Image (cartoon, rainbow, N blue to C red; front, side, top):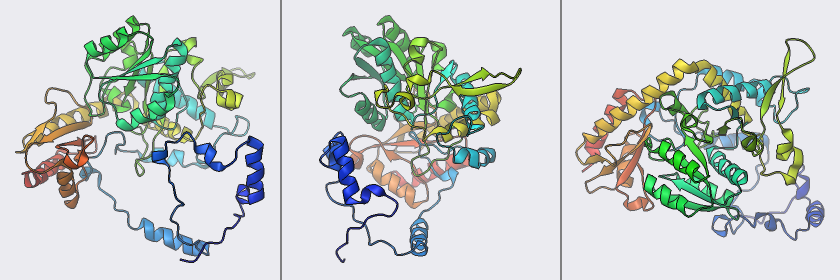
Length: 457
């Protein structure tokens, strides 16, 4: 490969050496690398990207991208049993039709006088989510459910003035990583098993800002002890933060009705397509408590009367809280990149209604129970926790000679995606995670069971 000649990009001013030098001098930095100092060294690339020579025309670039994209393989819904945070659910056509309208798709951060409709759409979303969560206040979405969890915990810390955060049960390791990064230097994380005695012991050490627990955990278990965790948090003067899968609330009691102070989670199941592991947005809900509302870093939209009788407008509530208003003095930095997903979720909830949400929640519970029962009938497969009730996700244990990774690979060769190895040692793991939703039929689940009978030895 020939030596690449440095060039200045025509549309990126800071690619010009003299401009970059002036910008660094203005902020007092010696090098761009200083801006990445907070990123752990293990996650940073210590070499330039291995990129091909620039393509000389738009036509060649399009042809190149089309060739790359043609390598993707679509998996029918009934053959994918992947979940654990990113799920395949039915997305009504109306959702896509509305969110792809230009006034929503291109409206990034406008104001009411130039952006008619978006503020109302987000207010409608907040109202629908508040009904689902049984709360009074819901934020404009954060980037994803991981950030929503971390932000809810930071809110609890600011509201209580305390330091320790008690995290309960089996939590997605990636979510723990995001939380740890978001609260480091401010809060101490204490991870305990899903057991009231362990929570009580952690709280006995004092200075707890919050107890963070899940209605359904990373393995899909419905935690029957959630009411106890909430009560223990309040007895210790801490706030109770509950993480939920939003579709589960069609069949399960919202944590707010059990006394949770903050409820958080990911919007992806509510009318948002999974997109290469993405398509996420986070929600946080609470009572209309001034102490908590003051700690929301993201935008809140409210309904206000106008000068015209019977006519209403929609605008920011307590805008001075946000980083939009106070910039670097904000309690946290937030953006509006996930607002479109909030509109999608609002449309989805409108179409489903209370009856539809109850139906889909009950369907997923029933499908999960059938899948667990059917796979447990396969010789060499047993349920990791046979007594628990599961929603969508569940784990099985293989008792034969083949590892979870080998079984997942054999399933993939048959066109089935599932059985993700569980545990830090994926190569030697003997447990695999599966997921079913309302899109899976009994025939789909039976096909998976029949394949496992051929594979598991």
